[in-house]
Structure formats: structure tokens, C-alpha cells
Amino acid sequence: MKKIIITGALGQIGSELTTRLREVYGTENVVATDIRQPEHSKVVTDGIFEVLDVTDAERMRALVEDYTVDTFIHLAALLSAVAEAKPQLAWTLNMGGLMNALEVSREFDLKFFTPSSIGAFGPETPKDQTPQVTIQRPTTMYGVTKVSGELLGDYYFQKFGVDTRSVRFPGLISYDTLPGGGTTDYAVDIYYEALRNNAYTSFIDKGTYMDMMYMPDAVDLIIQLMEADSDQLTHRNAYNVSAMSIAPEDVEKAIQKHQPGFKLSYDVDPVRQGIANSWPNAIDTSAAQEEWGFSPKYDLEKMTADMLSKLKVKVV
Ligand code: SER
Image (cartoon, protein in one colour):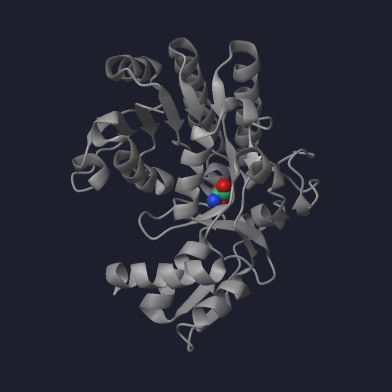
């Protein structure tokens, strides 16, 4: 990776990844793009920024050509709960954007990354130690777009030789930018509300285990995977990755170690609970470990300590 274009740079992953890529590869070598251009975001003010609607193939192609990039990181997409509310839009945006990004990567011979998700699994998938290669019959539009994306990534690699790489991200927890409409977002909201009210009402039920990861690990692993030797990669699209499998009550206990009076209650949202129930409890990440050395640093305790100390400055 020498010169990188990112879509969805203002999103939950994009905002932190853009900052890190600018540090590692040089500000002049990162072209951040998003559909909107807020004046005060560091993504917009601290480096190259271009407005890009990912369904606009012509503009995407022009940016890639003008900036002579060699790597495409495609993050622009709707998350699971929003996609369930607007399935047609989710298909148009998630798949239309992905096809445009893959096509431009084929034409200009770019290295390519886009995230898949634990949402690519479904109710028939084994729930525990979910294997790298297993049944994938998701029942959400988000999942349908993610499985399709994995298949397209493999197709572009096999048919056209595009160097496609991807991971199935679990729920990502971060203090910088809020996620927009995901099923795993309770695990972000809970920290904000712990600091504001010392209490949180979870829309996901007690006992619902899902995989999660702290954003610094997610950003690191994208760079690690993209820098890995191509010959090492067998399961390119997409590797299972996770740092912890947790239920709301586990986060409650971790927060109580810092704030003993913290109270968790439940008001379950049937849509997001239904999505969560269709996803695995805990996925097996051995392929990512073996093929490119995936090794997350943050467990629940370490993440909770860091989240609370970072958010304290922002929230209180
Ligand atoms: N965090 C995502 C979501 O809940 C999972 O990929 O939609």
C-alpha cells in the first residue's frame, strides 16, 4: 500500500482508519472520501478529502485516476438494522458501491479491501466456534449483501486477478465516531450512558452472545492483512475475526468494576434481537491467526478501561 483511497471515511471505521493511515503512509498518500463534507471533521480538515457518492462510478474512476492510487479501501455501506428498514436502498448502495469499487480496482489493478461481517452468517450456521468455511444462509438484507460481497471478492480474484482481501468483522466498539444503526451498537451506547447516567437500557436481551472487537484492533488488523504477503492468503474473502464473545451482562460487570453503582436494564427491540439471534455466539478465528498472524490486543476488561477513560473527556 503506497497511495490509498477510502470510501465511507467519515463512518465508524473510516474516521479512525483514515487518521491511522495518514500517520503510517503519509497524509499526502491517503485520499479520504465520503458522501458528505462536514466542516469540522478532522477527516475533512487534516488531509486530502473528496466528496464521493459510491454509486457514481464515473466520479469514483476519476478520483482513482487523478490521484494514481494503488489501494482501494471500500467502507461505505449501510449497517444491519438500517438495511433491514430499507432493504432496497441497502442493496443499491451496498452492492452498487461494491461493484463500482471492484470494477475500478480491476481496471487500475488496485489492491482491494472491503469488510464483511458476522452478519454474513445465518440461523443454520453453527453458533459456537463458527468455522471459517461453513453454511452461510443469512436472513437479513445486510447479510445477503455481505455474502454476495464475499463471493464477488473471490470472483474478482479468480477471474481477473484483483488482489481482494476481507474480514468478517464482529461488532466494533469505538469512542471516536458512533456506528450508525447496527445490531451490536448496544455495546457502544452502554459506555456513553454509563458515563452520562450510570445506567443503560439495552435493546439486546440478557444472554445474547455476539462477537465484538475494540476499534484499535480493527484498524491494526486491516493494515496487517493488507500488508500480508499475497501467497499466504487462502481464505481471502473473508476471514473470521473477533476479540471477545460477550453478552450485555458481561459488559455490565466490566463497567461495574469502574462504576459500582452502574445499572443495566432491558427493553428488547424485536427487530435487532431477531437479527442478533440469527448470528453466531462465537466465531473461530484460527484461519486469520494462521494465515496472517491476527492477534487482537484488547479483551473486555482492557477495552472497558480504555473506553471509559477516553469517553470521560468527551462525554462529561
Ligand atoms: N456491527 C454490525 C451491525 O451490527 C455487524 O457487522 O450491523
